[in-house]
Length: 335
Ligand code: NAD
Ligand code: TYD
Image 1 (tube, helix red, strand yellow):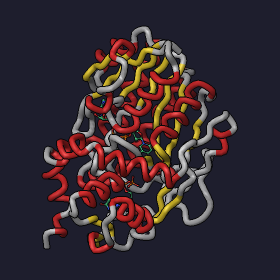
Image 2 (image 1 turned 180 degrees about the vertical axis):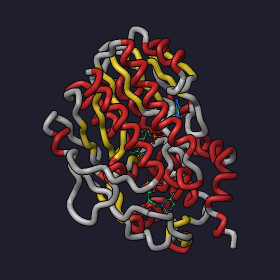
Image 3 (image 1 turned 60 degrees about the vertical axis):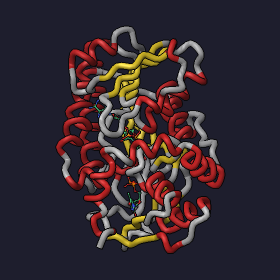
Image 4 (image 1 turned 30 degrees about the vertical axis):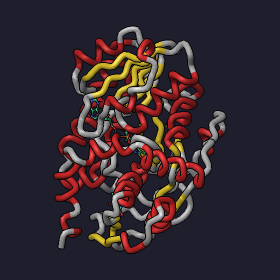
């Protein structure tokens, strides 16, 4: 593959994927198309080799711009999405527009351009919650919040293009991802940056024993790369971190790494429909040769250290659009 269109490549995982490609494949050129929503940030790819990276500000739901961006590309990898569950609970219009309609437009344009691979990045949240054991790729989709429902809708539309039009579609379903450059609305960067500032950590009451499976961002990027290059069209591949942790354990880890104590934990009302536990098996992807490389302890140390050393990056975000969102979302912290 010589030229890959990455959509949503100015976001958290997309930008890590762009860096991963440019580092591991000296001949590859990345076309990075991103709408630059509140979550998109060109600083996330500021350090990449500009000669092998073309940035286009555009919307995956825009037919003209997508057809143009796809010209000369071998593959497209779609990261572009609205991604935060709490925002989808507050209002899901943009989630349906990008995660379903946008994916539909991308598939339509890909059908006309003859790409050799069309990879849709999805999430383990499409399976819903599981009390024991782990979901596999053949488990039914039972998404339980507007974000995961929209992601599942996009997946179904995308995969229908494989069955109907032979579009070479591959889907990956990743678990909760952590690492540098994550927008600080998500729990890990939110709690880490709040702890650095001695601000409260708003833990959802009743959800403190809920479990997420943590995947280091570069391992997510390498998992998607493995599915892209070694995967079979029409197939779905789970990408799991293998690090299941309760939210309270994650919170305590962040407090320990930032040298703060538990008095910073503040209980806030639980998320409606809060999924209890996510767990997936990645055996199918591992059979293609993928292995996560980052151990949990090291990943957490390096990630917290990155936020400690890159205050300029997140302070700019937290003082902008984010502030109004935070004050509304966590209004009970004031009371
Ligand atoms: P993010 O919110 O950090 O980034 C999303 C990016 O998509 C942003 O740069 C944004 O500007 C861009 N975007 C949004 N709408 C767009 C549109 N209509 N057209 C073009 N660009 C648009 O998200 P992330 O955490 O990096 O997630 C990337 C992908 O991985 C998403 O598809 C998400 O569903 C999936 N995923 C995320 C996680 C996780 O833990 N973060 C886990 C599994 C799967
Ligand atoms: P989040 O990072 O939003 O990811 P997701 O909902 O996609 O799993 O949340 C991870 C977990 O942390 C989830 O169980 C909800 C919990 N959480 C809190 O307790 N407080 C918070 O302020 C946030 C954002 C999340």
